[in-house]
Amino acid sequence: MPNPDVNLYLVGFMGTGKTTVGRAVAQKLGFQLLDSDHEIERRKQKPVAQIFAEEGEVAFRVLEREFIEAGHPPRQQVVACGGGLIVPPGMLEMLQAKGVVMCLHASLDTILRRTQGNRNRPLLNVDDPGERIRTLFAQREPIYKRAGTTILTDGRQLTDIVSHVLRAYRREAEEWTKARLHGNAGE
Image (cartoon, rainbow, N blue to C red):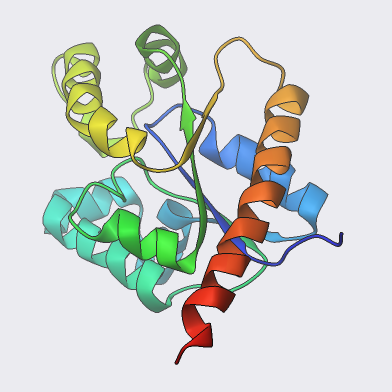
């Protein structure tokens, strides 16, 4: 079976490897990688941290919604989504209507280690970034669990993670396409 052309959306908490894994998966599929944060930065011509500082988180979430609604091609994209992109009501369902959604997951210890000292993450520009991560993780975990196949990235080689994502993507893309065909057959 040839590669499907359905978009793949990688979601999950910051530091789980969405961009790194997405880049490798996109290359294997012959797709383009889009990082939602980078696309927003490019369009606004300023870094996410500056958008947060000047316009606030709510305005940033509006920009994420606009990107998902109409800011990227409908096929052959791997989209590495910002960690909070699926948190607002309706965003997860919007992604699921546009393609296959997979959640990358890592332990809190791994996330803390991977994000330690990173000042490009505006939600971590607080006195106790570790506590902020634990709080956000606890708030977001139920949403991530609803996001579809979860792939652990702790202590695994990138090649192993990419192979797992590709296997799951091919299976789910076929199911997604069949569901859309059957869902539209009666119209």
